Every structure is written in structure tokens, then in C-alpha cells.
Image (tube, rainbow, N blue to C red; front, side, top):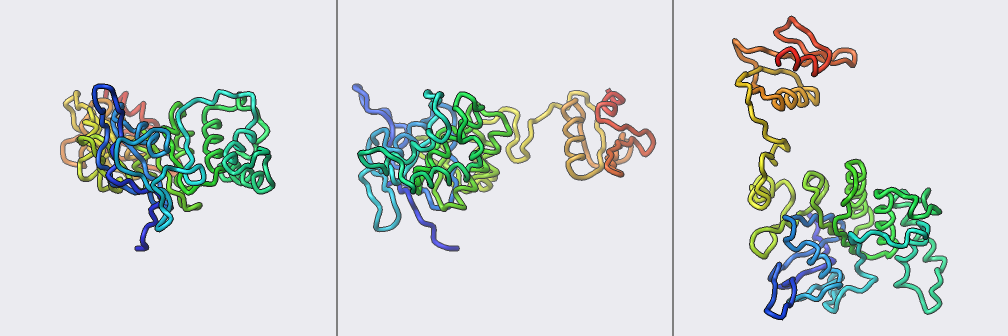
Amino acid sequence: MANKTALVSLHQLSVGYALPAGRNVLFENLGLTLNAGELTCFMGPNGVGKSTLIRTLAGLQKALSGEVHYGAGPNQSPKGPLPHQVSVVLTDRIATVQMDVRELVSFGRYPYMGWGITLSKDDQQKVSEALEEVHIQHLADKKLYELSDGQQQMVMIARALAQDTPVILLDEPTAHLDLNNRVEVMNLLRRLARKLNKAILIATHELDLALQTADLIWLAGRGKTLVTGIPEDLVLSGVFDEVFQFKGYDLKTGKISHEAYRDKMISLQGDGHAYLWTRNALERNGFSVTSPGPSLPHIDVVEKDGHLRWIINQKTSFDTLQSLLTHFI
């Protein structure tokens, strides 16, 4: 495996707030890296300090102690993130909704402008490339008030891309979005990290999406430190269960636990998504589902010519799950 290139390195970093009565330390002695080409998801319970760490890494808030180094190899700098190194997408709503999309994305080029504050041909090209990467070039002339929440979030990501930094930090980029837009944003960020070799860090509550898209997880919740690892290792180790203390949700199966309140067992046979959704429907309605066995009502899930059928004991057939459930209930 090739050596990873660290674009951000945390050295004994402590994060929090200096108060008159003393320090409120949220994280301490962190020693982590953000690597080129990787999407890292930063997770933890509400109020644990995710936004505070993001703001500290972005240089918007002073660390209590320790250092954050930016850049690769001998070019690393502990002086703070330059606008050529780190771009940030925070949760703040867009206030100036009268401007159009291209204007807002062009704000990403301000760190490169001279006193004339005029976009060069190179700046304009970077803006166009950012719009294309996020697949919103067709929205370039739209006013921001004409956009949906999902489209506005894409615009903010395009602005960060136009800034052309090796590191992008995002705080809850999928907040207020519907499922389809949340999936689109997470897949987009994963693709951008790989294609453009950027280090991307997202603070997020999207547990299910993070487990399927992240290269690495930073997990807060154990004292004032972070547990890190690939999603699968953290799931199998049980650390997610310790941190979030799931109530009726089985992370290893990705399912909500159902109570078998009908005290009736049904055997089920089939495969693919039809079998999974049939099992879900039965368990959600209080039945215990097991493998085929004697003396049990048995259901076969059968697909023929693109149509699903549910057959009980090789005799009675149903063409919807609703009618099947009605038979048992």
C-alpha cells in the first residue's frame, strides 16, 4: 500500500473555550491526520464539540494548546490555515439570496485576487470547473432564492472547490436536506476526494451514509479524545454502540429491533430484496421469522416474469404483502 500524504496534522491539539473561571476542554492531546484522496467523517453525540473542532481546524477559533500543521511534507506550516490551503463550508444559511449562483461561487476566488478585485480568465475558468464538478452549471445564472436547499448546498460546495484548496472542511453539509439530496451530497464529496486528491472532513450525524461512504471515521464520545478507524472496524468493535447507546437499533444489521408480540413463528424462504422486505413486514407486524421447519406456516417468496408472489404452504397465493399480512392478522 502506497504511503498516504497527510495534508493536515494535529499535534497534541486541545480544543475548547477559555473561560474566566477556567478552561472548558472538549478534546485534548489529539494526534490525527487528514490524508489526500480520503473522505473522513467526524461523528459523535450532539454537543460533544464537533463544530468547535471544525472551526479550530479552519482557523476560525484558537486552539487551547497544541498545533495544527497544514500542507504536505517539509512544506507543512503550523502558523494557521491559509485561504490557499483550507476552504470551509459551515451550516450558516445563505443571506445574500439576490445574487446568482456564479457570483457566489466566484467568492471562492477572492484569496487570489489583487487590489482590483477583478476575476482573471484563470479565476473564471476555476469557477466554471467548480460548477461542472458539482454538476450545477445549468444553475449558473439562477438567483439563489430560486434554488432548493439541496441546490444551495451544492453551490456552497462549488464555492469551496473554486477556492482550489487541498483541504475542505464541512460542518453538517446535509442538514435540512431530504434523503435523495443527502445521498447526492455524500457521494459527491467522496468522488471529489478521490478524483481531485483532496482531504475532505465532514462533521455529520448521517450515520448510515457515513458508514457507506467514508474512508475513515473520527468518532467522539470516549472522554475527550477521538476513536478513529475505517467504518467496518468501528462497527464490528462495538464502539459505535458504546458511544451512541442505540435504543432499539441494531447497527450490525442496520435494522430497528421489533418486538415479536404476536407469539407466532412463520418460516420464510426466498432471496434478494423481496425476501428482506417480506421479513421486515412480518417482523414489524409482530411475527417471529425463522428458517423453514416442520409444523410452521411457511411462505415462499417467488418472482416470475417480473411479478412477485407470496405462497403459503405451496397452496394459497398473494400478489401483495398487504394481502399476505391481512391473511395472518
